[in-house]
Image (cartoon, rainbow, N blue to C red; front, side, top):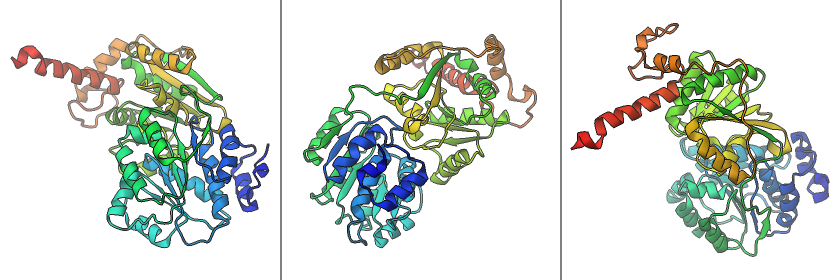
Length: 429
């Protein structure tokens, strides 16, 4: 089956061909026909399945038959990165149509976003918080919206956006086509769907999160103290690959990025404490090859789209199976092959087994031949040594700054020990 079977406008088919799409993915085959008929849909699809094109192509097709000069499409996304990504896909697919879109999100000046509303671009792709801010300023007028898309609805729920979404829905015309995409369907999403969808077509509903078929999974058992150096060994083993690695907190992301940079690895970082300009520069540098490694927290798991990404590495085992799915879904996109690995310490094995149970598969455990798994004691001693006595780096640092090997892990444990000494129940009495 080819995209021409959908009877799309020749300008859209030309853009699809230039983007390298040869055959529709399963979610595209299921979603495009009912969307072209004007039906509401509720779709669950794994990350990287091609769902963005599944809703953009039929929306563009319908807009091409309507008068210009009105904002008719609103796409709500949970993160800035995802809003930018969808906007980029729009620009590529709408290249020959003259239909413009604008991304609306926080962390940057609202002036260009306000201008997009005044210019009445065809589509607004927004995070809920910034859109509400512009509505309060009476800048964002949504009277002409005829198509509403909620992308990653469960993620917006996790981030506390459900009240914001309900406020936005109250300002939209009731006569509209509504599309909801969600990896999971928790009760609040189900209740929201009942309120906003009219006789929806349910697509690809699955009882548990599944990863894309083309991804190869592997887990490396490794102590917390050796994870940083182990990542260096992975980099040496995969010399030609760029690596996206996820940590559980923004502080660990900073410490890991600092460690890699000291070891001469070109590295970018994305997390909640970075400004939008910093996050954009890091992602652009990673896509362009200036950074070999991008260290990120889960804020980026659903908003990074990198063609031919070599490897996704879970530096920390994620808390939930859904987080694992969205992290590793950054590779193996659109049915391509991809690789994902997880560094699992002994205290994280239970969490990984829970993920395996949810996924319905066991992730094979492997080791790296030649890696020195006996260096843990010397690594901890190095991490605890006075800052000025570490060889090879004479830059002044804070007393409790990032350590050499194990800086991410040893510093975390040291903080816990300090807390136990000074805030234990016995001392507080």
